Length: 358
Image 1 (spheres, rainbow, N blue to C red):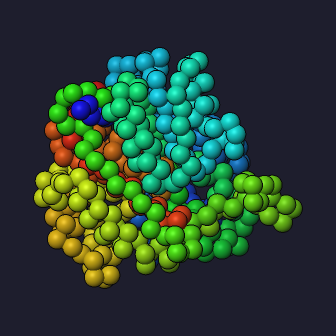
Image 2: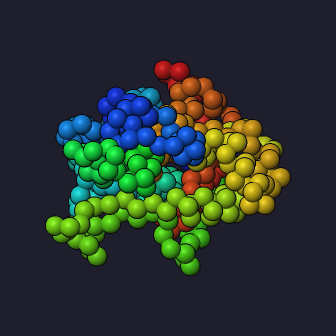
C-alpha cells in the first residue's frame, strides 16, 4: 500500500514582528502573571496596528507559503492536483478561499477542499489529503493552514486610549498572530510516511471555548452596535485543555500502534513543556506516555503567537528549517482546538531531506 509522505514545508509571516513592548504602547500592559500564561513574545499581523490598513490578505499569505513549500520540493504549482486548506478567517464566505489560492498559484484546474476550523484544522486537512493520495486518486497535494486574526483584533484598540481597553481584550491582542504554512505531500511505496491519525470533537456537551461572531448566516452583517468579535474563554481553556491533551495523546498512540518511547519529536503548539507538565500534573493526568514524550516536545508559540490553523504547520516548518527534525525521525503531531474542544493528531516518519536553507 502506498503511503503519503511530507516532502517539504513552507511558511509566510506578514510584516515586521510586533513585540510585547510594541503592544504595551497600543493597548496597555499585561500583568507579569498574565504575560507568563500567554507565553508569546512576538507575533506578526497583516494589519498595520497604527493605521488599520490591511497590507495583504489571508489568501496572499497562504499562496506565499505554498509557493515556498513547492520551491523546496523542486516542484511547480502545475504539479499540484489537490489543494486542501484550513482556516477560520477566510477572505470571504464565498468563494472558498482555497479557490482563490488556486487562482493565485496559476492553476486553471485542480481538486480543492476547504476545512473551516482553527488549530485542529490543519491536521484534519493533512489527513484528508493523505487519504486521497493513498487511494491513488491524486499524486501531489499541497496542504495549507493559515489565519488572519489581526483584522478582528485591531478594532479593539485603534484610535482608543490604551487605558480604556478591557483586560480580556488586551489578553486577546497579546495572544494572537497571523501567518500561513504549507506541506507538500506525495504518495509512494517507500517505507515511512504518515502512519495513522486520530481526531475527535469531545465538546458536544460543552459550551464553545472560542467563537468568532458575525459574518455567518446567524449574524450575517454587524449592526451599528455590533462588530465581528473574537471571544475566548481563557478560564475554561485552562481547566479543560489538560483533559483533551491526555485523551488525545493516548488515542493517537493506541490508534497508530506506536510507543511513546519511540517518538523522536512531538509537535504540540500549546506552549512550553513545563507549563504543559504543570497543567497535567495539577489535573492528575500526568501519564507515563506524557512523561516519555515531554523531553521531545517542540513548538514556536513565543515567536509567532496563537495562529489557529497555521500553528502546527508553522511549528513543523520551523523544526525542519532549524534542523530539529531529520529524515527518519518518528514524529507525533497534535493540535488542540478550544472552539468546540477538538483535537487532531497523527504519527509519521519524517521523509523530507534537509531543508535547503537549514
